[in-house]
Image (cartoon, rainbow, N blue to C red; front, side):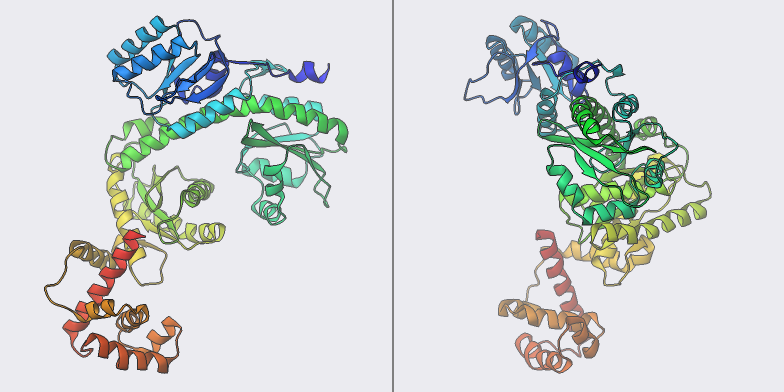
Length: 543
């Protein structure tokens, strides 16, 4: 059988049916009066001020309210241009859906709705990716999305053992192992990803950077007991989807032949991986939205329990996790989410991880019915996460441990206590990274009072006001360190990293002189500490 016969060749054009098969989790078909065999030539973001749509275009109507008459006008406009269809935000009601369905029938063009759980950038990216591949329902006898069967088919073609992995090196599928299977492959399959030490070595060597930039099959020579390997990145257009790894399994690879087979396999795998990613992303996003609604107190627990299997009537708790100062960017929070899930899963828990303003929230269900045992279990887990997460992210990680609650529908209250504990860790001066709210009660209470004073200004000029007017940050830091270290000048100087004599001189001769503060007056010290904390909290809130 030739390569073309075995793997198939991409068709020249994509159809609406083929596109829906690949990204149907992201868009929902409302109406297709001329059937789903219409050719889709390109994805176009609709511009209301320009009419450049062409036959076969799939128009993405960002900013068009499906409840407005403008939506009907856009459908008619698409029909006039012989466009393949229009993608709108979800209509939300049966009546409005019927109005748009009638407009589609009149215009002779398809109407689709964006998934309610996703956003426009994601949908547009997936549609573009879907256009770069075509639906192959039975390539080499492999049903669409059956990655395990695809791995077996590739293994037969290349004469080695195969893993198909996502962009985070998680194993999505693998071929059966043979007698010559090496230890690294066995550990990769059993662990669901390469051993941590091996992946770290490849990252240091720059292999993954090379893989993400590659346009052809990469070859890695045998190294000790690790056999030779071939790796290829799978793309849909410019969108990377995952990778295929082939390892010699008892016999050396026929590298030229295997390389040719892997090039063809990568083309075919793009269709399967895109379909698999759409299915998984759709399921995951719906799960995340259900979890977020529960933790925000906006919905009941039944939907989340149905999607995850978390028991409704058993105890639960929440961990509130942040990396750095609690203002990490989206990339760090994404990585934090992935790592939190991985390490909790290794511990045989039932975690649901969602992003939060500070980092991520980890919901744990099905805990021990004994409240004390359940709380101890959650505390141990939170404590055990700090070090590996910090090492992976190269950032200080802090974790607020929520109080165990009796039922899943009380998860929002556990989240409240976890957020309070995390806030206490971020606000307080104690060098701890994991705590329950009772462990940081003083910091939580003080933060509460400071929040209540936010925006308040005393009716008189205070010593701290005079330091602010002076505009010398070193003077503010000197006073703050002195007060935070119980008026011990030596400890305060060491904390700031300045000579003790310099610190003492700056405090006694400059801070006191400029501000007029009486450091022997307890009320003056309390007022100064409150104002300095308020200034820092205000600065952190504006950062």
